[in-house]
Each structure stands twice: as C-alpha cells, then as structure tokens.
Image (cartoon, rainbow, N blue to C red; front, side):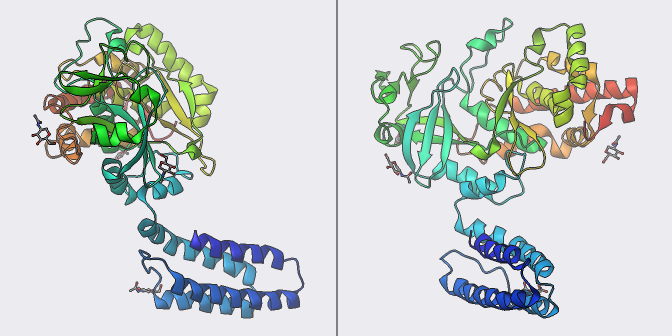
Length: 449
Ligand SMILES: *[C@@H]1O[C@H](CO)[C@@H](O)[C@H](O)[C@H]1NC(C)=O
Ligand SMILES: *[C@@H]1O[C@H](CO)[C@@H](O)[C@H](O)[C@H]1NC(C)=O
Ligand SMILES: *[C@@H]1O[C@H](CO)[C@@H](O)[C@H](O)[C@H]1NC(C)=O
Ligand SMILES: *[C@@H]1O[C@H](CO)[C@@H](O)[C@H](O)[C@H]1NC(C)=O
C-alpha cells in the first residue's frame, strides 16, 4: 500500500507533466522531487512495527541519484517508470510479508495468478498455520451444496469454509454399486488430503485446507447466532451434537454432527477470493466410470474440437484431473471452476469440493484412466513429475505421509492409503506408457493445448 501510494503519486505526476512545456516540466518535476523526498524521509520515520528494511542505503541513494540524473537529462518520464518498477519489485513483497496477515498476502497476490496458491511463497505455510490456530470470531452454517458446511470467520478477518467430521477414518466406503458414492458423507480428511496431493503434483488447483479440532462449545456454540446451530442441538452418547442444516439425506435426527469429548474435527479450507471471478462449468468426464469406451472416445474428440476448451487451453488440465481423481478415487467430480482473475493474462481451473475422495484405499478403479488411454495426450512436465514420484526415494505415498504429518489432525489418512497412492500412480503411468508405445513420445506429450 505504502509503496503503491508512492508509485501512484509519481505516475500521476508523470501523466500530468508530459503535455506541459519543457520549462513547466522542470519546475513541476522539482516540486515532485521535493515531495518525493519528503514523503520518502517521512516514510522512514513513520514505518509501523514489523516493517523490515529491505532497501539498503546505497540502493536508496541510487534511486534518488538516478532520479536527479533523469531530472538533469530531461528524461524524467521514461526514467521514472524504470525506477518505480525497481522500487516496487524490491520493496513491496518483503514489506507486505511482515506487515500483513497471511490471508491478505494470499489475496493480494491472487488477482494476478490463475493458480489457487503458490507453494513457493512464504504466505502458504503461514496461511495453513493461521487456519489451524487463529481465534474464531463467528461461526455459521453455509447453505451451499448438499452436505454440511460451516462458514468460519476469524478474528484476523479471514474467512474459511469448514467441513466437519462425519465418518471415522477407518470406515471405508464399500462402492458396492455404481453410484453408491452419492450416499456417502463427505470426509473432512479428504479435503485436507486432496490439497496436499494437489501440492505434491504441483497442480495448484485446490484451495489450501488445514485440519483443526474445534472446541464445540467455545468455537461453535459461543460464536454463533445461527438458529440452525443453536436450535438443533442434541445429545448423543453423552456428546454434544447438532443436526445443522443441509440436504435432509445428510442432516437429520439419525445423521447428527457430534463432538467427541468436547471437540469437533473440521477441515478448514480457505475461501477463494472474489477476485477469482469463478464460473462453475460442467466437468467433461463426469460419470465417466459409467460410460462405454466408445462414448469416452467421443468425449475426447469433442473436447479437442471444443472452442471453449481450445481457447482456454483446458484440454491437458482435464487430462491431469483424471489422474488426480484416479489417485483419490473421487467419483463425485461433476463440475469445475473456471478462474478468470481480472488482472491475470491467462485462465485456469479450480477443483473445489474433494470431500468424496479418499473413501477406500483397498479399491482402485482403473476406469478413471480410460479417457487417458482413449485420448493419449498429456502434459510432459506432469508425466515427468509422475515418473519422479514412482522412484524409491521420492514415492508419492511417502511424500503424502510426510506432508500430511504436518497437519494438526495427523494422522489424516489411514496407513492403507499410502501404498494405494503408489499403486494408483503406477496404473496411471502404465496407461501413459501404453500411449507412448502406440503413438510415440512426441505425439503423446506437449506442454500446452
Ligand atoms: C545494497 O544495494 C546495493 C545496490 O543495489 C547492492 O549491490 C548491495 O549488495 C546491497 N547490500 C546489501 C547488504 O543488501
Ligand atoms: C466479530 O464478530 C462481530 C459480530 O459477532 C462483529 O461485529 C465484528 O466486527 C467481528 N470482528 C472481526 C474482526 O471480524
Ligand atoms: C477428553 O478431554 C479431556 C480434556 O480435554 C482429556 O483430559 C481427556 O483425556 C479426554 N478423554 C478422552 C477419552 O479422549
Ligand atoms: C519432456 O520432458 C523431458 C524432460 O524435461 C525432455 O527431455 C523431453 O524432451 C520432453 N519431451 C517433449 C515431447 O516435450
């Protein structure tokens, strides 16, 4: 903010200065220079606590010297642009990292990115820590979708969507009939695991999620005015419960959401900033597991021809999503979000709602991979990463176990899931290798499509 203010002062002056005569330009420029100098000196003295000094004295003076040189040379306009850029690039990120809460840094950077997070930025680990620890200010039920969700507001101003624990970690969905997943409760652990999986695969399409054991009384009952919480309280087996409010199949007297010994586990997933301009769209491989190969081949052909998919370069993103859902065995992908950040030059997809994945580590379903074998097009860098994750010293299962061990709800997944991830990854690599032997490396792989 402070740096931008400085920049905007200079930009404005540059725009108004240019049309005026040379003499006028010099006089006004000197005034601007003086105000620049005094605001600069002022900034040094009014810096709030927590501000780190990033520009050292020689850089400061080099900025000022260049400014004076430009004044002398009469190239004030062009010279200024360059200097402002340097000032912003050098000073802005570190200043904001120290002074702003993690979620604000996240939002500030969000509008120019088409990814849901950047694993290399320092805000990410802080954001996850904050989701898991910052005091809760307000809790309410979020009426969105069919299953139980809270909206949680924190005292630092951040907002997250919380999915409560509904089933035990060692309960595995039977998947005994096609479509039986529709009756499953969402798993809070699946949301957390999907984020970690997305991060390891470097897709950046899942919003950051952290686990947290909420104090049922302090964090929920005492932080709400929501009648759907306060008015639906029950006691079951000595535990506090609520019916809450969602689709009657998932919120009823038999399907209570209950604390255990006073705590309720939830997955807290960062609310996607409004800047994302998200649009929901139908997912092309929806219910693919129930389609015949010849029908899937048609989806491939149509997708390749689809103007919307072509224009936005989504084809390979969708191929990666198949691998992502195969690894989790997530049958419930029915839509995706198109991200259309207003300051961004490109467009991306987001995969929210992963609560139906990670339901049974003992049942793989290679029908997820049928479209991969039918289309035989894939992003090279992702294939390389997948190969890396099959190697003994960096196995996907081990990477997931290590990554999830940092979550407060560790163990997030039962141990059965880690070999399952390795097995399923090998199945996906095998499918791609079949493509390579059929069509050749150069036909199968590219980066953009
Ligand atoms: C200070 O800035 C100068 C010029 O940009 C740079 O060469 C030098 O390494 C910097 N010193 C420190 C301690 O950052
Ligand atoms: C906390 O919630 C109260 C209402 O319960 C609201 O007035 C206040 O602004 C909130 N504080 C923050 C920091 O969001
Ligand atoms: C219940 O919680 C209390 C305090 O939070 C703890 O001391 C106790 O061990 C817990 N009991 C069980 C069965 O987890
Ligand atoms: C795929 O990536 C590998 C490793 O970076 C590279 O050696 C290979 O040439 C790439 N192939 C294609 C078709 O892009």
